[in-house]
Length: 201
Image (cartoon, rainbow, N blue to C red):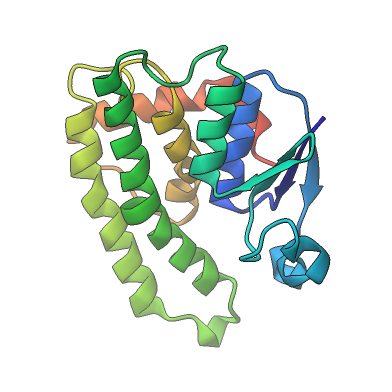
C-alpha cells in the first residue's frame, strides 16, 4: 500500500492527499508532527533528506516534493487523468502549479509560521505584507480562468495545487473581491469536490 508521510496543517501535504483521493487510491497516512520537529528525526531523514513533508512510499519507491509526487501519481496511476492530453494544456497546468508553488503558497507558509508564535512575538508587518502578496496573485488566476471552469480547462493537478490554500483565505481573512468573478466561481466549484472535505485532516 502507498504510504504518505504527511502533516495535516501542511498545504503541500494536503495537495498530495487531494490527488490521492481524486485518483481513488488507498493510502496509509503517517503523520510527521512538524511542531515537534519529527521531520528532523534521523529515521525520517532517511526518507526525506531535507526533512520536509510530504514524502510518499509506493511499495518501496520513495519520492518527495508535492509537485513531483503528484506528477508521479499521474504517470503511475493515469486514471482518472489529472492532466490534459495535449502538450499545450499540460504545459499550462504545470505553469499554474509552478505559480502556486513559487508565488502563492510561500506567503501562506509565512503567515502560518507567524500566527503560531506567542502573541507578543508575531510580526504583524510581515503578515500584512504576505497577505498583500497573496492578493496580487488573484489577477493572474482570474485571467487564467477566463472562459474556463478550471485552470487547464478540465479539473486537474493545477486546481488541486490551490485547493489546499482555499480555506486559509478565510482563516487568515484574505478576501477575494467581487471583481474576481471567475476566481470566486472556481473556488466554489473546488469546495464541492468530495476530496476537498476528505483531505482536510
